Image (cartoon, rainbow, N blue to C red):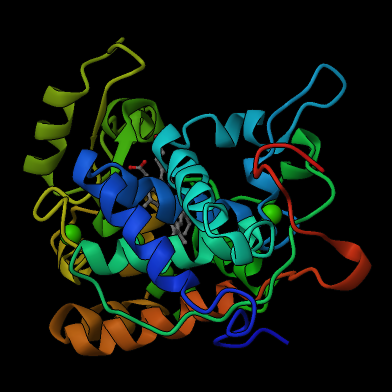
Length: 304
Ligand code: HEM
Ligand SMILES: [Ca+2]
Ligand SMILES: [Ca+2]
C-alpha cells in the first residue's frame, strides 16, 4: 500500500525539504551517509520500517537502540532524521503530517545518491511504530560471522531473496567497522590457523596493523579499503580479491551459490545498481505499519 507521491496533497515539497536537510548534514560530515543507510536497515529488520530504532530509552523502557547490536549505529544517522523532521515541520502544512519512518526512507535514498550511488523513486506511506524494546532486537539482525545459510534464512524471513541479500550487502561499499567485529578473522580463526584462509594475506596483515590486539575499542576502519566514500560496485571486486571484511561479506564469494552474482556485479555496475534499487525498495516494504498499528510521531525519538 506504499506509493510514490503519498504526500502530494498535504506536503507536496516533502522530498525536496528532506533532500535539502540531508545535503546540509552531508556538508558537515560524510558520516551521515553510512550512518543513515545502516540505520534504515536496522530499522526495517526489527518490527518493520517504522522508525522504532530511533526511539530513545526511558527509565521504564530499554529501547531498540540500546541493544548491543545497535550500539554501534553512528549518532549522525539519528541526527539526520531529526534534522530533516525539523525542516519538514517548519512548513506549516507539513507539520506532523510526515512519518519519521518515511523521512528515514527518503534520507536513505538521498545519502546513497550523495555518495555516487543510484537515484530511485522512494515509496512512502509508512506510519511510525508504537513500540521499541531492546529485547525485540534479539536474533533479528545478521551477525558478521554468519554463513550463507544463516544470511539467506534471515533475509528470507522478510521476503528478501539471496540476490536481494547480496545486493544489500553492497552497502558495505561505504562506512566503518570497529576492530572487534572481525578480529576473530585476523587473530584466532582456528587453533591451527590464526588467520582466516579466505582473507587476502596482505590485506590480513594490513588489518592487523590497523587493529592490533587490545586496540582501543573506539577505533573503526573503512569497510571498503579501495573506495570507502563512494557507493559503487568495488565491494564485489574486493570480494573477488579476498578483501571482504566480515565472514558474512567474504562468504558471498567463497560459497558457490552466490559467487556467480558477485562476479556479475563486480563487472557490471549498472546491473548492481538495478539490483540494489530492487532490493532496497523491497527492504522499505518490510513490516509497514498502517491504520491503528502506527501514528505520526511529533518527536521521532519519543512516542506521542
Ligand atoms: C548481510 C548481513 C550484514 C551484516 C552481518 C552486517 C554487519 C555489519 C557490521 C558488523 C558493521 C560494523 C559496525 C561497527 O562496528 O560499527 C556494519 C556496518 C555497516 N553496515 Fe552492515 N551488515 C549487513 C548488512 C547490511 C545491509 C543490508 C546494509 C544496508 C543496506 C548495511 C549497511 C551498513 C553500513 C552503511 C555500515 C557502516 C556504518 C557506519 O559507517 O556507521 N549492512 N554492518
Ligand atoms: Ca523498525
Ligand atoms: Ca566503495
